[in-house]
Structure formats: structure tokens, C-alpha cells
Length: 206
Image (cartoon, rainbow, N blue to C red; front, side, top):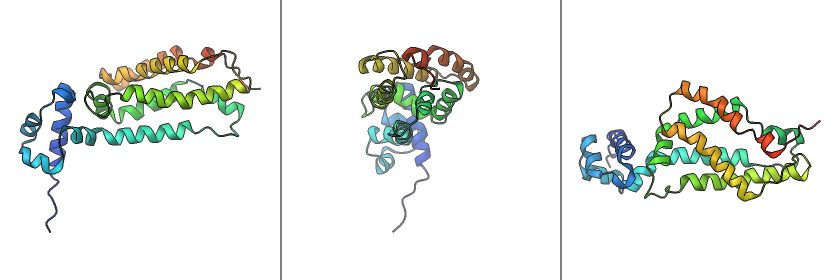
């Protein structure tokens, strides 16, 4: 049996990406995607069931990578030291630049998720991401509070609000097409804005 010709897949995906970024998922046209890719609608449907599957093909790898990072960073060991807890809340430029590099390496997929996903299963991506991060982040806060390392009482709802603001600050330059040097300049300002040690009243372990 002859293997299916996958050589046109990159053209379809590139055309779909441009169409989704320009018009959003709901406004995107499969006819436009096919025309710009130079393929027939029949050829597209042999490879993808429709717009939803096309959109997923463009963003699923980025979402999987984000979930993997979240799972790695969320792991809270019972034997975590006080110093490790303190460092977990240390907002420095190295940490911020790591996140910017991670997102920048997946910038088209992130822009699709953040500004073009209405109507897909990722419509609530931002909210769901913050919700998942809030659960693990609050567990770290409770561990530090139980050990007497933080002075300020923060509810889970307040933590959700702060994390929503934090991630929106990270997403905005991605959505608005900041260049890499602009992200580097912004990084220090974000670290100053989100000083978690000061916000939580975190004392440095002796």
C-alpha cells in the first residue's frame, strides 16, 4: 500500500496558522486556508477532520510542554527544606527570562492560544492554566506558612487574583509581538512588580 503524501502538510499548517492569527478560530475559513496553501479541500480533509483538528495540530505540542513544566514545578516534596521554599518564591531575572524563552520558543502557538482560540477546546486556556498553577502555588504558600516562614495571610482566592495578574503580565508582551530585546528590558520591571517575598512577608531562613 502506498504511503500517504505528507509533503503538503507543512503548507496547510502554515496557511492555517496565518488564517487563525489573522481572523481567530471562529472567523477563519477553510476555503481560505486551502487556497493560500494551494491545495483542495479534499486534500485537507484527508489529513484533518476540520478547523478544530487543524487548530489543535498547531498548539497541542505547546500545551503538552506547558503541562509537563507545570507538573515538574508543582511537585512539592514532604522533605523540602526552608531554604528551598524561600527560593521557590524568589522572583529573579533568571527565572523570568527562562519563562520568556520557553514561551518565545513556542510563540506562534502561544499567540494562537491567547488570542485566537475562542470556539475551540482551548477557549478558556488562560483561566484553566492559572487555576492549575494556583493549586500548586498555594500548596507551597501553605507549607511556608505552616513553618512560620511567612507573615501575611493570603486566601486561595487572593492567590488566584495575584497569579492571574502575574500571568497576564507575562502573556501581554507575547500577544503584542514584543521583540526579544524588549522582553529582556521588561524582565526587570516584572521582577520588581511581583516581589513575592515582600508580598507574602517571607523571611529568609537562617
